[in-house]
Image 1 (cartoon, rainbow, N blue to C red):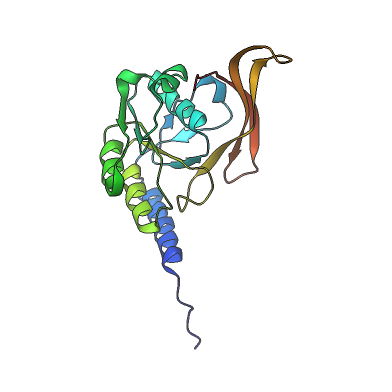
Image 2: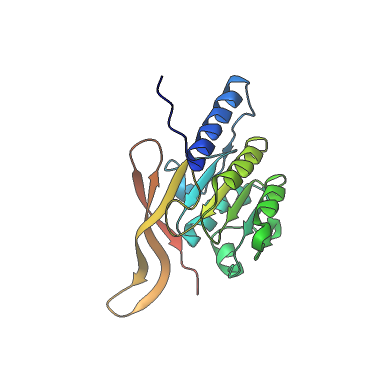
Length: 210
Protein backbone atom coordinates (compact mmCIF):
# COMPACT_ATOMS: atom_id res chain seq x y z
CA UNK A 1 0.00 0.00 0.00
CA UNK A 2 1.45 3.35 -1.03
CA UNK A 3 2.02 5.95 1.60
CA UNK A 4 0.23 9.28 1.42
CA UNK A 5 2.62 12.19 0.83
CA UNK A 6 3.11 14.36 3.89
CA UNK A 7 1.46 17.76 3.85
CA UNK A 8 3.48 20.90 4.33
CA UNK A 9 2.59 23.00 7.37
CA UNK A 10 0.91 25.67 5.23
CA UNK A 11 -1.17 23.01 3.44
CA UNK A 12 -2.28 21.44 6.72
CA UNK A 13 -3.31 24.81 8.09
CA UNK A 14 -5.36 25.49 4.96
CA UNK A 15 -7.09 22.09 5.23
CA UNK A 16 -7.89 22.67 8.91
CA UNK A 17 -9.32 26.10 8.07
CA UNK A 18 -11.56 24.64 5.34
CA UNK A 19 -12.79 21.88 7.66
CA UNK A 20 -13.60 24.40 10.37
CA UNK A 21 -15.62 26.40 7.88
CA UNK A 22 -17.58 23.32 6.87
CA UNK A 23 -18.22 22.36 10.50
CA UNK A 24 -19.51 25.87 11.23
CA UNK A 25 -21.85 25.62 8.26
CA UNK A 26 -23.15 22.19 9.30
CA UNK A 27 -23.66 23.30 12.89
CA UNK A 28 -25.42 26.45 11.87
CA UNK A 29 -22.58 28.81 12.82
CA UNK A 30 -23.07 32.51 13.45
CA UNK A 31 -25.08 34.26 10.75
CA UNK A 32 -22.84 36.26 8.44
CA UNK A 33 -24.19 39.77 8.37
CA UNK A 34 -23.69 42.28 5.59
CA UNK A 35 -21.54 45.25 6.61
CA UNK A 36 -22.40 48.62 5.03
CA UNK A 37 -20.13 50.01 2.33
CA UNK A 38 -20.17 53.62 1.10
CA UNK A 39 -22.53 54.44 -1.81
CA UNK A 40 -19.62 54.79 -4.25
CA UNK A 41 -18.86 51.06 -3.77
CA UNK A 42 -22.40 49.79 -3.35
CA UNK A 43 -23.18 46.98 -5.77
CA UNK A 44 -19.51 46.45 -6.64
CA UNK A 45 -18.33 44.62 -3.55
CA UNK A 46 -19.71 43.19 -0.35
CA UNK A 47 -18.31 42.79 3.15
CA UNK A 48 -19.67 40.12 5.47
CA UNK A 49 -18.92 39.59 9.13
CA UNK A 50 -16.42 36.84 9.84
CA UNK A 51 -14.47 37.58 6.67
CA UNK A 52 -10.93 38.69 5.90
CA UNK A 53 -10.39 40.91 2.85
CA UNK A 54 -7.20 42.25 1.27
CA UNK A 55 -6.89 45.83 0.01
CA UNK A 56 -3.83 47.43 -1.59
CA UNK A 57 -4.67 51.13 -1.25
CA UNK A 58 -4.74 53.26 1.91
CA UNK A 59 -7.47 55.52 0.51
CA UNK A 60 -9.56 52.52 -0.50
CA UNK A 61 -9.08 50.88 2.91
CA UNK A 62 -10.30 54.03 4.67
CA UNK A 63 -13.21 54.31 2.24
CA UNK A 64 -14.25 50.72 2.95
CA UNK A 65 -14.16 51.37 6.70
CA UNK A 66 -16.20 54.55 6.27
CA UNK A 67 -19.34 52.61 5.32
CA UNK A 68 -19.68 50.98 8.73
CA UNK A 69 -18.45 54.15 10.43
CA UNK A 70 -21.15 56.28 8.78
CA UNK A 71 -23.75 53.71 9.85
CA UNK A 72 -22.82 54.30 13.50
CA UNK A 73 -20.37 51.44 14.07
CA UNK A 74 -16.92 51.67 15.61
CA UNK A 75 -13.88 50.95 13.44
CA UNK A 76 -10.19 50.49 14.19
CA UNK A 77 -6.82 50.86 12.46
CA UNK A 78 -3.84 48.79 13.59
CA UNK A 79 -0.23 49.28 12.50
CA UNK A 80 -0.81 52.68 10.84
CA UNK A 81 2.04 54.73 12.30
CA UNK A 82 1.41 57.39 9.62
CA UNK A 83 -2.39 57.37 9.95
CA UNK A 84 -3.80 60.55 8.43
CA UNK A 85 -6.58 61.88 10.66
CA UNK A 86 -7.61 64.54 8.14
CA UNK A 87 -7.58 62.03 5.29
CA UNK A 88 -9.74 59.58 7.23
CA UNK A 89 -12.27 62.30 8.08
CA UNK A 90 -12.47 63.51 4.47
CA UNK A 91 -13.04 59.96 3.29
CA UNK A 92 -16.00 59.55 5.66
CA UNK A 93 -14.55 57.92 8.78
CA UNK A 94 -16.14 59.23 11.98
CA UNK A 95 -13.13 59.98 14.18
CA UNK A 96 -15.23 59.94 17.34
CA UNK A 97 -15.88 56.24 16.76
CA UNK A 98 -12.39 55.26 15.66
CA UNK A 99 -9.71 53.36 17.59
CA UNK A 100 -6.09 53.76 16.47
CA UNK A 101 -3.22 51.50 17.54
CA UNK A 102 -0.34 52.87 15.45
CA UNK A 103 2.47 50.51 16.52
CA UNK A 104 1.38 47.22 18.12
CA UNK A 105 4.73 45.58 17.37
CA UNK A 106 4.88 41.88 18.12
CA UNK A 107 1.55 42.08 19.97
CA UNK A 108 -0.44 42.79 16.81
CA UNK A 109 -2.40 39.52 17.08
CA UNK A 110 -3.54 40.19 20.64
CA UNK A 111 -4.53 43.74 19.64
CA UNK A 112 -6.54 42.62 16.61
CA UNK A 113 -8.22 39.82 18.59
CA UNK A 114 -9.28 42.31 21.27
CA UNK A 115 -10.56 44.87 18.75
CA UNK A 116 -12.69 42.44 16.73
CA UNK A 117 -14.53 41.69 19.96
CA UNK A 118 -15.92 45.22 20.11
CA UNK A 119 -15.51 46.87 16.70
CA UNK A 120 -17.31 46.23 13.42
CA UNK A 121 -14.37 46.80 11.05
CA UNK A 122 -10.66 46.49 11.84
CA UNK A 123 -8.05 47.54 9.29
CA UNK A 124 -4.64 45.92 9.82
CA UNK A 125 -1.41 47.01 8.17
CA UNK A 126 0.93 44.07 8.86
CA UNK A 127 4.69 44.45 8.88
CA UNK A 128 5.22 41.23 6.92
CA UNK A 129 3.60 38.00 5.84
CA UNK A 130 1.22 36.44 8.34
CA UNK A 131 1.80 32.78 9.14
CA UNK A 132 -1.14 30.36 8.70
CA UNK A 133 -1.37 29.57 12.42
CA UNK A 134 -1.79 33.22 13.44
CA UNK A 135 -4.24 33.79 10.60
CA UNK A 136 -6.32 30.80 11.73
CA UNK A 137 -6.54 32.19 15.28
CA UNK A 138 -7.83 35.54 14.05
CA UNK A 139 -10.22 33.98 11.53
CA UNK A 140 -11.71 31.77 14.25
CA UNK A 141 -12.20 34.89 16.39
CA UNK A 142 -13.88 36.70 13.50
CA UNK A 143 -16.28 33.84 12.90
CA UNK A 144 -17.52 34.06 16.49
CA UNK A 145 -17.91 37.86 16.35
CA UNK A 146 -19.76 40.25 14.06
CA UNK A 147 -16.60 41.83 12.69
CA UNK A 148 -14.65 42.23 9.45
CA UNK A 149 -10.88 42.37 9.02
CA UNK A 150 -9.35 44.38 6.18
CA UNK A 151 -5.67 43.63 5.56
CA UNK A 152 -3.95 46.60 3.93
CA UNK A 153 -0.81 45.48 2.09
CA UNK A 154 0.76 46.54 -1.22
CA UNK A 155 0.83 43.06 -2.73
CA UNK A 156 -0.97 39.70 -2.61
CA UNK A 157 -0.21 36.79 -0.32
CA UNK A 158 0.41 38.71 2.91
CA UNK A 159 -2.57 36.97 4.53
CA UNK A 160 -2.73 33.22 3.72
CA UNK A 161 -6.33 33.14 2.53
CA UNK A 162 -8.83 35.96 1.98
CA UNK A 163 -12.41 35.95 0.76
CA UNK A 164 -11.73 38.68 -1.77
CA UNK A 165 -9.12 41.26 -2.65
CA UNK A 166 -9.77 44.87 -3.63
CA UNK A 167 -7.25 46.92 -5.57
CA UNK A 168 -7.18 50.47 -6.92
CA UNK A 169 -5.79 50.41 -10.46
CA UNK A 170 -5.33 53.17 -13.07
CA UNK A 171 -5.24 55.92 -10.46
CA UNK A 172 -5.44 59.49 -11.79
CA UNK A 173 -6.31 62.92 -10.44
CA UNK A 174 -9.46 64.83 -11.30
CA UNK A 175 -9.66 68.60 -11.60
CA UNK A 176 -6.36 69.45 -13.31
CA UNK A 177 -6.50 71.08 -16.70
CA UNK A 178 -3.66 71.87 -19.06
CA UNK A 179 -1.19 72.84 -16.36
CA UNK A 180 -3.79 74.62 -14.26
CA UNK A 181 -6.84 73.92 -12.15
CA UNK A 182 -7.46 72.55 -8.69
CA UNK A 183 -7.46 68.96 -7.52
CA UNK A 184 -10.85 67.84 -6.24
CA UNK A 185 -10.80 64.08 -6.56
CA UNK A 186 -8.85 60.90 -7.10
CA UNK A 187 -10.19 58.74 -9.88
CA UNK A 188 -9.42 55.02 -9.69
CA UNK A 189 -10.65 51.76 -11.11
CA UNK A 190 -11.48 49.45 -8.20
CA UNK A 191 -10.96 45.81 -9.13
CA UNK A 192 -12.60 43.06 -7.06
CA UNK A 193 -11.12 39.57 -7.20
CA UNK A 194 -13.04 36.79 -5.48
CA UNK A 195 -14.26 33.29 -6.36
CA UNK A 196 -15.78 34.54 -9.62
CA UNK A 197 -14.32 36.52 -12.48
CA UNK A 198 -12.70 39.85 -11.56
CA UNK A 199 -15.04 42.83 -11.90
CA UNK A 200 -14.38 46.52 -11.62
CA UNK A 201 -15.80 50.02 -11.55
CA UNK A 202 -14.32 53.47 -11.91
CA UNK A 203 -14.94 55.63 -8.86
CA UNK A 204 -14.07 59.13 -7.72
CA UNK A 205 -12.72 59.59 -4.18
CA UNK A 206 -12.46 63.02 -2.51
CA UNK A 207 -9.13 64.80 -2.79
CA UNK A 208 -7.16 64.48 0.43
CA UNK A 209 -4.37 66.97 1.01
CA UNK A 210 -1.07 65.23 1.68
